[in-house]
Length: 379
Image 1 (cartoon, rainbow, N blue to C red):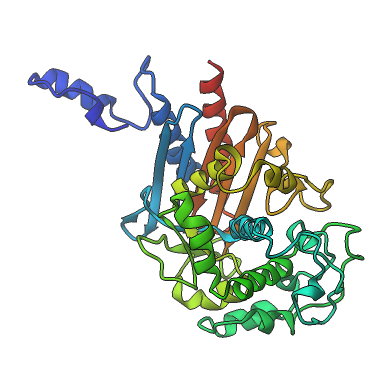
Image 2: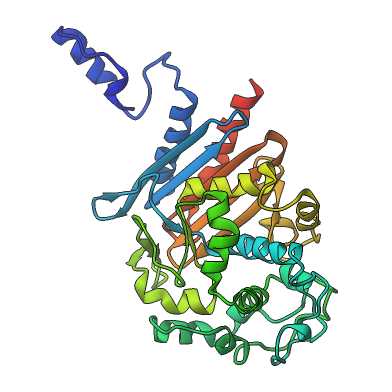
């Protein structure tokens, strides 16, 4: 707690008393405001989970927006509420909305088979549909599970991969016949981004900026490596050697990852919260009819404890892991980062959260934030 919340008086005795109360814990009987409680949860989370840096934002039903940050990017450079983080697979929700915009305009249909839009690829059933790519029921092999691809990605970190570089070389046999099961599949979203590029005659970033970023007012959201990142970017930290010690990694040498595997959205926590609001509350990014399709969740989800259902680029998170609460949205991780764009369904609250350690335990501070938010709204 900072001393600015107290008036400095001339009496040295009173001044000394005030200084003695400025500690990590509030003085007895002192009541933290809602914003202070949320900030304290971040500060405590960095300490308790031995994290590096974290940022979060909460948009309440009355329009109040809280923004907070804690920890460091690198050295003495602190994380702020304007810091950009890689959002990893949250990129899938942006991809899905771009596809739904194209469905709405009549460019494509969800039931189109892939052979209508794509050349033959090894081990890809040509009758798989766009919908099945979106909800991970295609059965297509997930290229990021290929035993060779990560060695190839990190062998040349500045290589710019094309979709066909991946799709022609890393798809093994299918997990199951199309539509008969569920398996998380980055391959399907690589195909969808290729479709966005080709049908819009643009980069995916240009299409997303026209269809999504600009209309939604997402001024702190960028798609790397199609466009230049503008702003302060958190350094990502990764345990490269399995020794439980994080090493600082940089963005530029990871061009290979973002062009091969995708997940190129970089954003502030505030924009991640705003993105959830645009999808689930405002009704401006997709129509209500489209949102119903996007939240038509395939369930149960095998071998995925984090989610209990998956729709079209939207996950239904397992309530058992989140204080029993019903949450829609998407999470993501990338080398050195983890993030979430979340909608708290029964409370009409949107949350953005990001940290700069891949799959870092610090992300579990979300449950502390949820406890504070729900307690406040139930008062």
